[in-house]
Image (cartoon, rainbow, N blue to C red; front, side):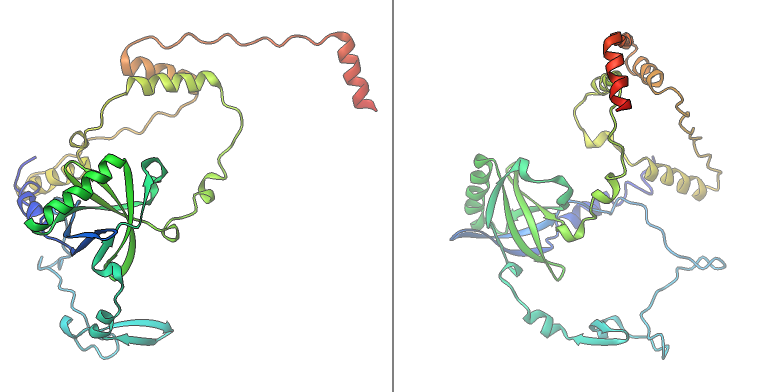
Amino acid sequence: MGSRFLNGPKGMAMAAAARATWKGFLKLALVSCPVKLIPGVTAANEIHFHNLNPRTHNRIALRPHDPESGDEVPKEQLVKGYEYEKGQFVVLEKPELDAVKVVSDKTLELEEFIDADEMDVIHYDRPYFIVPDGAPAEKTYRVIAAAIAEAGKIGIARVVMQARERVVAIEPREHGLLMNVLRSKDDLVDEEAFFEEIGEGKLDPEMIELAGVIIDKKKGEFDAATFADQYQEELGKLIEAKARGETFEAPKVKAPAKVVDLKEALRRAIEAEGGGKPPAPRKPSVARKPAAKAANTNRRKKKS
């Protein structure tokens, strides 16, 4: 894809990623050092759209205004308000909000350590790099990072970000530390609501074996670079074509074929994946005929 639309912002993305979103202290018991958090993700390489006037193609400006009076209110004059009843607000001024301080507002204190396998990945929300803030902090930072790495543990801490105290997981990465903001239990939807309707009947062991062969043929090592955002790429091609006054022909996407015989579909999939032959079909086990005496006994039990 051409660099005009998607590759241009990469330099800006790197610069944006270098800006710290939080500064404070990383603390392990009585040992601490100044650190800063740098976002581990960026949206700078995504294609973003603007709302335009269809007649003039001028960008639509969304300005804050009072819906009753129609008066426009400058952004710097806006205040925060909490609606405790319909149409009734408690107004909070910035000095009042700044006065609500807790230790985690400026301190990232490692409160406890857990084994890596105790952490359920469903709680991971957003990654940040923890880096030392200044040369004097480097030695202490490196000692804490090395100790966590040697222990093979994940540190649990709390930090105030975006007016909310968040629980975070801190673990070693390369020569430093990675912090993941964790979703709380209240942020997650109860999975039982979605999985409870899935049947629990006995599955055909041969089908599971065939699916396992396909999984084995698809073994590999994860490389994020090979998983490009195809939708963004196609959007880029569409934009470039329209900018040149050309017509863009989107690739035709075939709908998956309807599976009638699952076992046969699995066998064909194995051949398509690796060219090898799928395991030979299992011979159906023949149930033995019950002895006449046993059959009579069963019938008698039913009658009684």
